[in-house]
Amino acid sequence: MNKKILVAGGAGFIGVNFIKYMLNENPDNKIINFDALTYAGNLASLASCENNPNYEFVHGDIRNAEDVAEAIKKYNVDSIINFAAESHVDRSIDGPHVFLDTNIFGTYTLLQAARDFDIQRYLQVSTDEVYGSLGKTGLFTESTTIKPNSPYSASKASADHMVRAWHKTYGLNAVITRCSNNYGAYQFPEKMIPLCIYNARNGNKIPVYGDGMQIRDWLYVYDHCTAIWEVFSRAIPGEVFNIGGNNEKTNLTLVNAILAMLGKPKSLIQFVKDRPGHDRRYAIDSSKMKERLGWEPSLTFEEGIEKTIRWYIDNQNWLNQVTSGDYQNYYKQMYADR
Ligand code: NAD
Ligand code: DAU
Image (cartoon, rainbow, N blue to C red; front, side, top):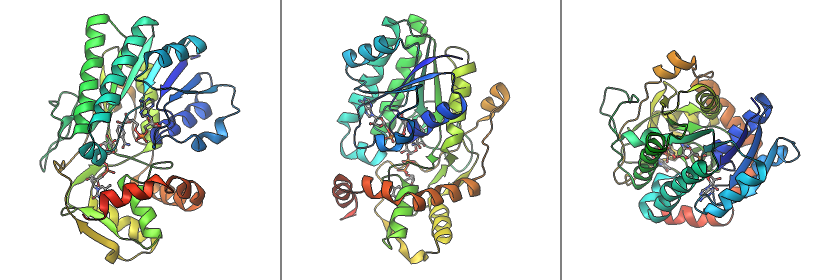
């Protein structure tokens, strides 16, 4: 395809997996990883890519128009995929400002740059959380009303609205993906699955919010990456695609499964105060992905979670590095009096 793609937020969990997928499986394209390296960005995760001639790293902030313009000009970028965001719901409840700044203003900056530099394709990586919460039945489709409930999801929904407006008003060739919960290698252990693995292996309690009966639809991160590439390559300008794992689990079922696989007792579970505004259930209808683009998840949950647990066991150094320093303060602040 020979695209020169600026991957914003490429040093985060999904960005790292996407860059590895692209360099390994779609090597005709040049990847420019543009990342501010916040607490969630980690270049060590991409050490194996450093010498790849199709990979460049730019330390830059999507809120800074000059940073973005410089990278686009330097590498003659023709496409943008935007993963860059503040992504953790609990942090957005404690401190919404940076979420609005990065997720809304940062997206605006990228959209303006896309106009200024005649970018041929813009893909916004969004989330199923923009749809809010489901009751016991039903699925999110692409035409479900946008009804975000957290500062994080409100900021992501705002960004989606701008992407739509830039397509309608300025004719930008923009598309949006809305995916369910991802899991896999390189996920920061503030998120439920790596937090559970990390705590359980250390014999520490697993904090489960409220009654633990909230439902998420889990997708292995590799499958999210292949879906993004299908949408990038083939969607009609302006289209939205939902991406999901067809794999609903209550948080309690999930934690019990991980504890069983690690050979750890259920007594490690500790019910703690619920997350304010906690969405009860997410579930995605990905039939458009299947019918229009022939995409389906390639791994079962059992295969994905086994690979994930194995990765965290085999990559103790990575885990030690990201849980040193600030992480310990974050953990105390979030959970000590919960
Ligand atoms: P993450 O928090 O692991 O990574 C975010 C990355 O963005 C980090 O590398 C960080 O340094 C970078 N970043 C943050 N602010 C920046 C800025 N101002 N300029 C440049 N870079 C900046 O997030 P993730 O879990 O990999 O999620 C990636 C994207 O996918 C996000 O947009 C998120 O909303 C979306 N998403 C995530 C999930 C999930 O389950 N993790 C599911 C659906 C959608
Ligand atoms: O649905 C997609 C979204 O999934 C993405 O847009 C977000 O970026 C991503 O963070 C994720 O959001 P969640 O809030 O669903 O993920 P998290 O891992 O934080 O929590 C998963 C579920 O587990 C949720 O119901 C809250 C619960 N939970 C989480 C933590 C961290 C607990 O019970 N205890 C915990 O300690």
